[in-house]
Image (cartoon, rainbow, N blue to C red; front, side, top):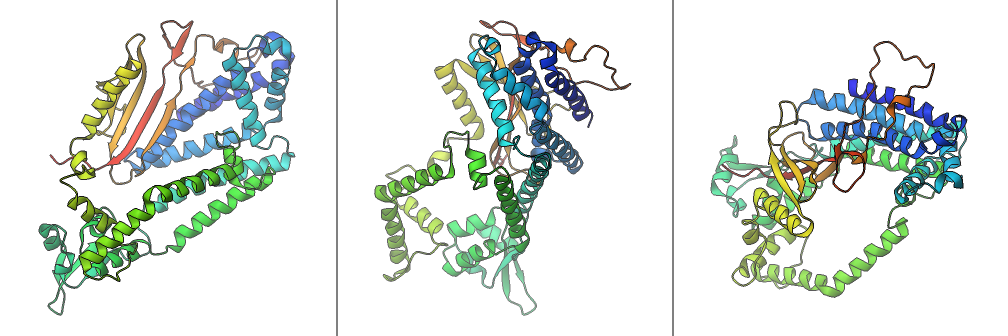
Amino acid sequence: MDSANAAIARGHLLVERIANAPERGELEMQKVIKLFDRLSDVICRVIDAAEVVQCLHPDPAWRRGAETVFEEMFSWMNTLNTDPRLFKTLHKVLNTPSITTGFSEAERQAGIMFLHDFEKSGIHLSDAKRAQFVQLSDKIVGLGRDFLHVSSTPGSGPSHIMVSSPSRLRGLAPGYIQRITKTNKHGEKVAAVSTSGWEPQMVLKHVEDEEVRRAMLVATMAEDKSKVAVLDDLLKTRYELAQLVGLPSYGHLFLGKKMVKNPENVKAFLQTLYKSLLEEGLEKELKMLQRAKQIHTKNMNAKLEAWDKDFYQRLIINQTANTIPHGDSISAYFSVGTTMDGLSKLFSSLYGITFVPKSVLPGEVWHDDVLKLDVMDERDGLIGTLYCDFYGRQSKQPNAAHYYVRCSRRVDDDDQEHDIAKGMMLREGIELSTADPGVNMIGKEGKYQLPIAVLSCGFSRPVG
């Protein structure tokens, strides 16, 4: 919590400085966009780091602590996005030509972006409705976290499917079948196949017995009322938030300033893509899979079912292995290390950028698997740092993701010494977050803090 408290303390100083800028004259008003940029950096550095710890750290205590920090900082950020004092100052700055004429294009765009954040957060609403906006936004964050958690935990369906004759698992490794087979009280051999982890995919891809594949798919798709309840609550709360700010759906709220603009454009894109796929061979591929099933089962009336796709796709690939390269034959050449080395060479050729592995300090990373890469530019030298957490493990979020821990920005003109107004007294013992000292960049004026990002994947750990 120390970093969060220091960030909040610095943030409060910046908030008051922005709110009081009109009283301090035009010179201070010219610094408002920079002050907003600093305030955003102070908040996001803590929020983004907390998100990384929440999603990737193996220690539950660390995850709980990060969750507390994330929720507190996110709630405060939403409160600031509904603060009329900050909005009025920013609006005045952007509508004062004598100030904006001195702005760079980057400053102008940053100001417009900050203004949009206020508008999206219902700055035009009454005090009561702005407070409701913060409450609903906080609830959405909590429900989103809950949904991610329940989605990655076993559901209410069966934990195993019981296969009464282990020979029906033909297609799986004999050693694996032997390990999961037990003799029941009637003297019958029964195999218990897990419905979580990697086993379902292996069954659907390799087991010849259609009924076993069907049983596995049904078990893994079993309804879980507790998960559905969380999702329903999340969707309902998102809708309430959109309605509060006068929009028809959460999609309109989320997409408003993004490239696609609105849900209608997303739907049109997906429909066009679907039509294109149909025209370019989707129906042909489905017919190919059905034909493979008919030949394999010696039943010309056999229909393709949901539990058949992976099995017959693999069958077709194996039959064409000698003429067409396929996933399994190609992937052997693309280990994680080889792929990253190849990307480094590609980026070097295109952009003059390479990845250089670096050792980490004690406590710098959250797991021994994490690899630190310095991002080096052939002209500027070090331009950022990338932490790579490639392999899946228990309690780690399974989805591939990237996280911004720190953005690049100029720091030598932060003017921190004027954050504390004349006559202002700070509480004894209070700590203030400070900016990174920054480094010089070739061809750029001033000093810049370097960006830090995290890349997370769920790859299987290589054997040996």
